[in-house]
Amino acid sequence: MRPSGTSPPVLLAVAHGSRDGRAQAEIRSLAAGVSALAPGIGVRAAFLQHARPSLARALAAAGPAAAVVPLLLAGGYHLSGDIVPLAGQAGLPVAGPLGPDPRLVTALADRLAEAGAPGGAPVVLAAAGSADPLARAAASRQAAMLAAHRRAPVLAAFAAAGHPTVTEAVAILAGPAAGPVAVAAYLLAPGQFHDRLAVTGASWVSAPLAGHPALPALVLDRYLAAVGQTGPGNRSHDLTSVACLPCPGLAP
Image (cartoon, rainbow, N blue to C red; front, side, top):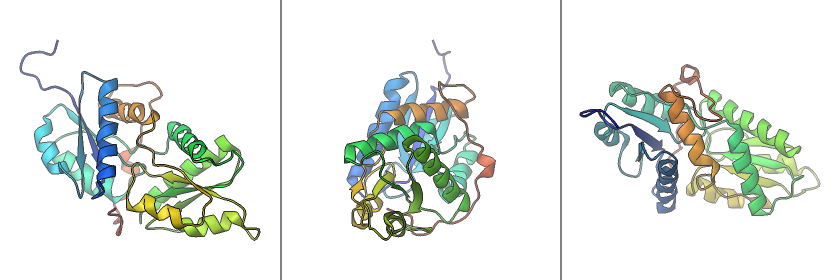
C-alpha cells in the first residue's frame, strides 16, 4: 500500500496536439492502453498545441510523483524547447522520445503489411520533419533499422521541414522506371501530415502508429527509464544530445 499522504505516481504522456479530432482520440486511446499495462500508475494525456489539457495545466495538476513521456518519435525543439523547460520548472523528470526503437520497426512493418505493400517494395519512411539535424538523423536511423528488417531500400523523408520531401523520396526510389514505392507513415496519429502522404505518388501508404499494440509498452518503458526503473526491452535516450533549434511549420 502507498504510505498515507504520498502522491500517486503519474505518467504524463505529452503529444504535439492537433485540431483534428481523430488525432486527439488516438492519443487518448494510446494513454488508455498504457494505463491498462500499469494499473498502479495514473496515465494522463496532455498536448503542446491545439488540444486540452495544455502541458502547463497538466503539470500543475500532476503532483510531485509524476514523470513526463513525450509522445514524439524524435527529439527537436518541442522536446528541448517546450517540454524539458516546463517539466524542469516543476521538478519532474522527462523521458526520451519514442524513436528510434526496434519496436517501432515491428509497428511500421505491420502497418505496411496492412496497407498491402509487398515485402520487397522500396519504402519511404515519412516523418513529420524538423529543423533540428539530430531529429532528422534519428529518422534516418529508424529508416536503416526498417531497411535491415525488410531487406529492401528505405529512405527517410519529411512531410514538413527537411529534405528530401516525401514526394521527392518517392521519385528517387521509383527511379526512371517509375516502379511502385510504399510510404511508411512515421507519425503517431492522423491529421494534416498523414493526409499529405496520399498525394506523394506512392502506391501504398500505411496508417499512423498510435493504435499499434507495440506502442503502449514502449511508452511505459520510456516512463520506467525516466523514473530510474527498468522495463522489458527498455532503451533509454540521452536528453543532453537534443539540440534546441526551432522547427517552424510543424503545427498539424
